[in-house]
Length: 335
Length: 293
Ligand SMILES: Nc1ncnc2c1ncn2[C@@H]1O[C@H](COP(=O)(O)OP(=O)(O)OP(=O)(O)O)[C@@H](O)[C@H]1O
Ligand SMILES: [Mg+2]
Image 1 (spheres, rainbow over the protein chains, first blue to last red):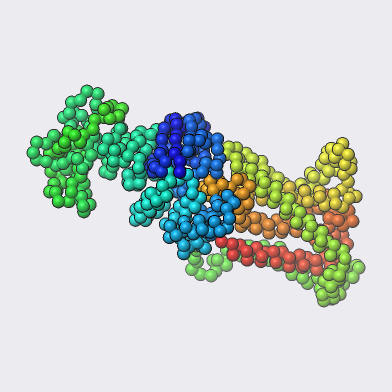
Image 2 (cartoon, protein in one colour):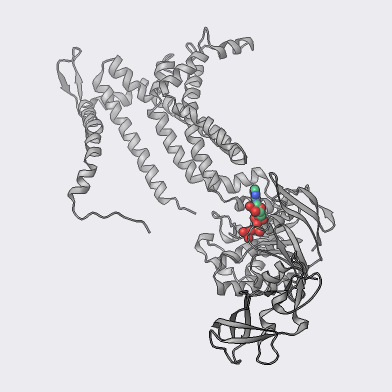
């Protein structure tokens, strides 16, 4: 168990800086998820914590100790890779036992610890198999097992679920969450999937092009996005952004107004503006109505299934509560 | 699933393999048949008539101490050439694999020796180690070592081994490098996080994953050392001194073309043919069994 602290971390490849000063403070036992679009530097950040990538400037501390100069093996961490990175020529047992063997643990201790992990992850029937004889989900579990047998202070995950199909992903997501709760190990988890981030995180870090745009508990980030980027990245379908004049709002310093689709409603009484219905997507529990505003901007209204669905091409009135809108300035920062 | 090209009739495919069949027949089956046939005879001293002796040539060879000595020489020579060429190649490949920048340059430079014909390579090394004017000989002399591979059998063996292995390093290097680069980086990184330092990683992860490549190269290099080093030996030592570098292939040549003992030479060829056949079978058996992880 340990805290992880990143202070003004920067990373330069050649002459391009890809991480522009990130500060994070992870409490002992906390589950922190780094989320962001492809190429924003999530993996790079995680690999700097792991010691697989040098830190150009700034400081990484694990358990209060500066680890910038330490090799990966001296940082007391375990990592789960996107492609699992299992040792293909070893059995499942040996894959999990590898780190313990190197640490010089006794045969009996290795057997007990691997046995415990295998039981926890329901891998007992597969201990003699090679990784290629396992399904994707089982390989994923072996990778998790390899991480937990060593009882590290910190778990690092780099998109561990992205090679699984949608259903398995949901199931493994739950398992990871429960496992982390049970073991109470500080975890740093990277994903580009905002649903994964929302469901797993105690706190999440939304990264945008090498900068941590916002750090906070998922619901807090969802409700009060600090930038337009965060507002559009977290939440599906993304927040609607309306030019101020179209929305009929006057606010000094603001340029655009954001409203979540579930806060927007189609209403005949006292609408704030009128729009034309382009098409509607009925998803069963809810319906997404896509409308075009007078200036051509598209917006989405999320209705529950029971509500009256408007005709395509119809002209409708749109409304929302003033408390649900967020104003952004010209740079995209919430005002 | 393997994709197969299918032909409608039998004639087109036959026609397509015909040129290769022709070449194989003329340059392989015909001489091989000749060798088998000749190995059953001994010619008279003037080469005018042949006398059938059955397996006499083989019997003679197997009891002949020179021939057995040549077997031992060949074994030592092949083991050394294989070890040196593969060892150096693996070392260079590991170094090149760790390079992030400029590995292309090293790769290109390291491939060059492969383009040099064995005989030319032999002459090159001969010049450097020439007992009178060789630059290495001179340098060794200043260190107080008197190099003379013309008289010293051990030194002669050392020289032909180095010259033969040298040209082979490029080839092995390419395969080893490709093998190393096929190992996913994340597997190595996972091992590093698991606590394995460089040498442990090499021993427990890299080397086992490289074993199909290593095995393939092992067979190919033994075949090379057995059969393709003739040019090097011919130019540097001509099998001497006192037959200390007369490997089996060279003995086929010196007994047949120099000694004019065609029957014995042919019998030796047949034995070599059997050896190469055995090596090929071993290789196929193992490659079939080798799984791709
Ligand atoms: N070894 C490297 N050399 C040069 N540039 C690199 C290197 N590794 C990453 N980059 C660059 O750094 C940026 C961040 O890469 P990174 O792999 O951290 O992205 P990511 O957020 O993990 O993306 P993804 O979701 O696609 O995995 C990218 O623009 C990438 O091109
Ligand atoms: Mg990544």
